[in-house]
Structure formats: C-alpha cells, structure tokens
Image (cartoon, rainbow over all chains, first blue to last red; front, side, top):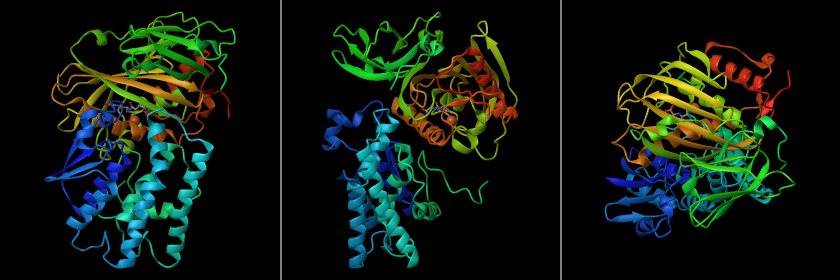
Length: 212
Length: 288
Ligand SMILES: N[C@@H](CCC(=O)N[C@@H](CS)C(=O)NCC(=O)O)C(=O)O
Ligand SMILES: [Fe+2]
C-alpha cells in the first residue's frame, strides 16, 4: 500500500488526502510531528526528503517529494477515466498551469496560515496585497467561467487543478486573509464540497444540506 | 502596542513559552498584555526576562513550573495555579504546542468549556449529529470563590481520545482557576475511574489576540505521541476556525447581552465571574 508522510494541519498533505478520497485510493498515513516538534526539519527526515517538506509519497520503491508531482502520479495511476488529468492538449497545459500557480502564487497563503496557527507571526501589508492579488486571479477566472457554463478551473469537470487550488484558498481566513469579496470562489467551494467522496480537513466544514 | 494599565490583569501569572522551545543560549521576543518582552535562556538553562521598553516599570517576575515558563508583570497576591497531577507521574505528559488565535483569551476559554459546539464543530471525535444534547451539570465556586468549576458535565463522544475505540458517554469537570487558564478533568478510557487532564495556559498578547500554550496529561501507553498530537490538532484547528468568526473579539460581560440556554450555564457563570473580578482587559463592557 502507498504511504503518505502526513500532518493533519498541512493543507499540502490535504490535497493528496482529498484526491485519494475522491478516487478511492487507500494509503497508509505516517504521521509527522510538524508542530511543535519540527520533525520534518531534522536530519533524520532529510534522509526521507532532502527538501524537508511534507507531503512525501512512497509508492513501492518510488518516492515523490513534491505535492504537484504526487497529484499527477495519483491521477495517472488511479484515474482510468483521465478526467482528473485531461489528455486533451490544451486542457493538460491549463491543468499544469494551475498546479504551478498553486505552488508559486498560493504558497504565500499557505505560509501565512501556518505562521498564524503556530503563533509565529502575522501578514505584513505587502503580503496581504499579494494574497489578495492571487485570490483575485482565481475569482476572476471562475466568474468568467460561470458565464460560459464552465464550473471548474479547467473545463466542465473537476481536475487536479481544483484539488491544488481549493485548500489554500478556502483556508485563507485561517491565515488572516478574509474571503468576503470573492463570491465566485464561494460558489466553487460549494461545488467542490458536493463531489462524491469529498472529505474535510480541520478548518473546512462539510456542506451540511441534507445532513442536519 | 501599549502595555495595559489593568492591575487585575497585570497582577497575574501567565505562561509565555514551553521551556524546551527556547534552546540554551537563545533569546526570544514576545508580547504579554501589550508589553514587549525579551526572554533569554542562559547556558545554565535558567531564564531571564526583561521589558523591551521599560518606561520605569519594575522587571517581570519569572518562574519555571510544569515545564512552562511563567511571567508576571505585576505583583501577584497568589501563587501559580496548583496542578498536583503534574507530579503524580501516572499519566503521560504531552506538550500540545502553541497555537495563535486572533481573538481575546477569554473567547478561547469560553469556547473550551462550551459543550454545545462539540457535535457540530468536532463531529466524529468529541461529538456527533445523533446526540447534540448537553445534559445538566452544575457550576460551583471553590477556593474562596477564586476558582470557577463546572462539574458533572457529560457528553456522548464518538472518539473521546486518541485511545478511544468506540463511542461512549464521557464525564468532564472543568476548572477555571484564573481568567486565562482552564483545565479539563476527563474520564480516561484506558484507566476506568481515573481522569485525563487537558489544560490551556493562555498568553494574551493584546485584547484581541493570544497564544494558547497547552498540555495534556493522559493515560495512554499505546499510542505514539505524534498520533495523540494529531488527534488534538484536528480539534484545535476546528475550534480556531470558529473563534476567528466570533465578534466582538473581546468577550461581552454585560448581563443584557446574554441569550441564556441550559448549556450556557457555565458561560454565563464565567462572564459574571470575570465581571466581578474587576478585570477590564479583553472584556467588552458595553451594555448594548
Ligand atoms: N481553543 C484552543 C484549544 C482547543 C481545545 O483545547 N479544544 C478542546 C475542545 S473545545 C479540546 O481539545 N478538547 C479535548 C478533549 O475534550 O478531549 C485553540 O484554539 O487552540
Ligand atoms: Fe472545541
């Protein structure tokens, strides 16, 4: 069985957990004491991943130390429908474009959130502006898409682009970045939460219509 | 940030760090009650704490206790809270880490002992949709009215601790020995008849932000610490995302602003008790 080096409050790890849940892929979590232990920064962990980051996926002898690469790996191996990583040339490019955006432009949201949770500091004004600039890109793209009945980041079905962008954006308030001005994001969050097999992580609440 | 002038707040003890978080020979800056502090740990392991901008105020008092570093900016008329279970050695000590919360410390304490949110916020662990009802419990004052207790609380918990295998009805006592400290005494699932302890030592930075230093003393020989930690951090982050949205961030204490229900008995008692203490810091005393 594949193994995932995991921390419950890591939104990066949640991307992998979420894709696995949606595709029905089972994995064995190896829990890492990220906070307060900082175990991922210790020399022992560098033997597992020299970049000293999580998630890390171990699939047989194959080890992957990068979130986007893990998402691609899982989609290629476990999604015969090819919906989550489309083969169509343009859609494939667009999907990878959003993965890059998630890793680069949305990384700030992730670090603001972890810093805020671990009491290590809060956002500066410049960081706040950068965070909102990144969120606005997603908001505008989704709002335009809705006019053309495109309800996902790439085309008319969810892809790993949605999986990579959903956690950092919906959890932005945890890092002190409010989401009031992004109505299209909220509608998209709702669509993600209604996906069959959707799971939450702490800080994200399920869509309760029909439950209570 | 300006240092509070509230003597009730100043004359109390606060945790500002878990001692092993600061290596020997290192220093750290932090803020307590609006006062910037420099904490330095000498090569002998001892701590010193100085005001970053003294402005004629006396130096802080510093103590190490229970593995945490305690500071008072004023002249406390009482000792650091007594928790005898720390020296009993029958439970496992877990440092649950520091968690920053952009709200008043009082909001965090009130959330901590509010049983009515368990089903909807900690679904699957501390509560479930099937049984959201909070059974009756009683509120008591102990230690010459110094301490507020909610005793005989109970709740049906799907997974009450990292060691839990099945749902069960768990009994709790909540102890609030000072406005910024709360300790739960909760049924152990491993040693029937014994209690696990979970405690929050809150460091108020200013009236609307704080750091929660917290610990658990649990009967659990089975699970590795990281597993127990992940169990608690799931609960933390759920509480935190609820606390982010509570307004005002300062805790209202005027009786006219309460909507009483039975499960609110401890929260009303806490607000009244804070009101009577004369504390100003972190409280919203407006009446409407
Ligand atoms: N509210 C604090 C601490 C959270 C906390 O301690 N929550 C309680 C529940 S409200 C808890 O962990 N309880 C564990 C238990 O009851 O077993 C935070 O946000 O850091
Ligand atoms: Fe809670």
